[in-house]
Image 1: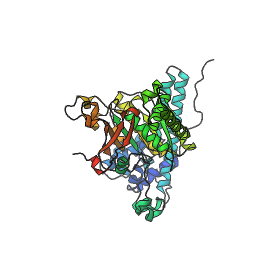
Image 2 (image 1 turned 135 degrees about the vertical axis):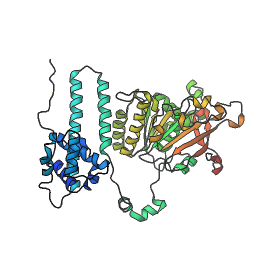
Image 3 (image 1 turned 120 degrees about the vertical axis):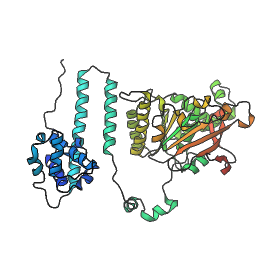
Image 4 (image 1 turned 60 degrees about the vertical axis):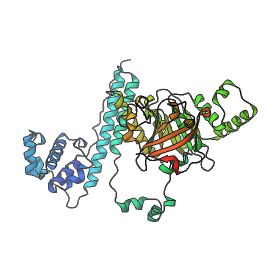
Length: 458
């Protein structure tokens, strides 16, 4: 059957009267431009001549010149656009019918809403036309649509400025709760005491990047945190794990052996004694009861994560989302290079975390730079692989470093790991020492976890 092209028969949504009143308000009082310019752009106007008039107003304002009929007409004339906006007579008519007391914010909201509807329609129509043409990979079309939709939503979610009085008024419990540190919202505990002390735990809306070279234990660290949160007897919370590298069976095996403190090699080989079998059964019971959810779908993208996490959050008290790991995620759409793609992914995960108010713990690979660096092999922010804007988007960047990997002959280094807080938006940076039990792929607090275990950066 021949494919019929779909066209829109109805006119696109607009409100020309509201557009005209906005331009007229600026003409009669140029200070109104500042109120408008923070929300509207020329593209938000539906009528072409209104777009041109607003753009010329913006040019005058940027140069610090007065905005009135004379200056605006002159600016349009210099651009060869005066006749295209129906001349000086139309500029004069803009403030006709403008009420003495007008609410310009209401006009702006109307124009912005109509603009958003037109953008959604255009995006949908373009996608429909590409689908009907059938000359592209459907995944490519879907990817472009998803990226455009995320960007469209991002441009609309702009918070207004708030005064201290407004912030406190909106704070649950008011000023007394705001000033009472015991009632301030605390993050979710990771189970690692020094990390929780330095960061306040994992908070909703924040993006936590944990990076390391291969075999340093970044997946083990993430799984240890997941287990602690999901099996916390006091307040268990759901944890979603998106594994792009390992199967869900492998992840469950690692969590099971870590929880039971059973050697993974012995478990895989089947050489277990009675005590180990009993420990495994007890650990499995705890894991089966825990709200842990694992997705090992290959080629997961932002929209996959978004839809699954949103659904899980609606059904459970979601405490954490884990991505293992960032460089294996697929960006949808076209990118000039891999750095741009990774930057798009990190930004998308940060926005998703804010929208859903859930902490995201995202694992990342490091470049080979730490291994080639003479002397100190500790990672730095510049070592983030295909970093782009990872460190910019993240609220915290931590590195896992085990010096025993580079100096296996030194006994004093065995079983000691460092969690290096290289960046923290709302707290200190520094180094936290942890115990690493290689047989169980498990991190634990040191037996003597005191302030001496923390070493600030030089």
